[in-house]
Image 1 (cartoon, one colour):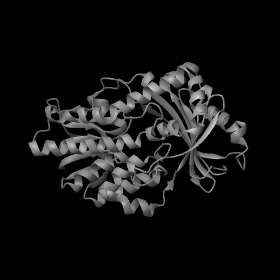
Image 2: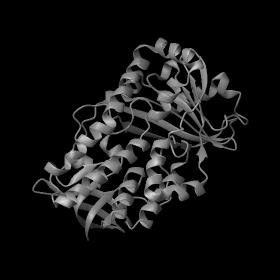
Image 3: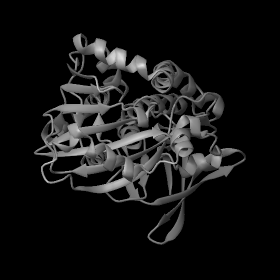
Image 4: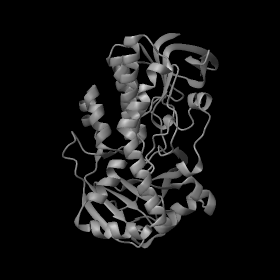
Amino acid sequence: MEHEVIVVGAGPGGATAAMALAQKGYDVLLLDRKDFPRDKICGDAVPATALDLLYSLGMAEKIKEAGFYYIDKIRLVSPKGYSMDADLEEEDHLTHSAIVPREDFDVLLQQHAIDSGANFIQAHVKEPIVEDGRVTGVLARVNGSVKEFRSKVVLAADGVTSAIARTIRPDDHVDHHRAVALRAYIEDIEELPHQVEFYLYQEILPGYAWIFPLGEGKANIGLGMRLDTFREKNYNLKKMLQDFMEMPDIKKRLKNGGQVHGVATWQLNFGSQKNIRRAYDGALLVGDAAGFINPLTGGGISNAVISAWLATETVHQAFLKEDFSLNTLKVYEEYCEQQLWRGLRRSYYLQRVMEYAPFAVDWLVKRAQSSSEFAQIFMTKL
């Protein structure tokens, strides 16, 4: 079971890395514990930056034919109830941001990775194989038995609970740099067509509640907040969602009382904590496994796709050198620093403003009624 590259996790980060490396001619094995299509807890917002990169990997026609629900407007509601609506400015992109259930989005990417030449196996990766301090493959359960899969390099894109990261980098994220969120689907809401909604009300700061439309009265609805605040205040996410739906401006839009389904919670690791390693001898961490969640919005798809692309370039250079040691792979850390870190830190500072100066959020939203700049910050960070 030898391959040149093993990619663990076939979500947006893993599938992007697999398709990019397969298109370069490498023997890629893509592993995921679930078969596709499968649900993935998420807000379902896919930014135009991610779609641009997928277009460059040959997905333009598949994405156009998939019928994504595109977004062209945004609504922000401040702690005191100031509201602003703005057009999204995405002229520099090849397409618009979209709301796409992950069950549909992920299978599209996974299939394109296969079409690009990657081999896919449904397998539950238990741990990496580490020899003399270097990752040389993975142990995975396939059809009830544990098998070894070997490779020159392993890309871990298996999410926040990554089996690879858990072994080579014990969880060192602190609650201050983590979040908890709840997602549900609703099918009886009067949605704002092609407009995403963010509610920055006092009780949830520095988090927010959202309504992301899917068309025909359907929407992804949910909320998220920083983990330390959640634990300190002993909140209940399901009750918080119900309270949000009981707000007068929301309740009046529920046609049959607001019946929800697909309710699920999950945790996220923000990309705002310093000194988190993502490169090791024989392995790189990608996307959520690397902790690249945006600390302002909780969005992770764009950073997952970007980090996958950076990992692909790193691995390609490693093959040219025939050197998969940390000394070669650590350039990935530099790429991530250049491409992602500045935006993540800026989002972290904005998150702190939301926490300690909610009046500033009121002022920004009220002032932004004549300018969409503040709205653009939210969408680009999503």
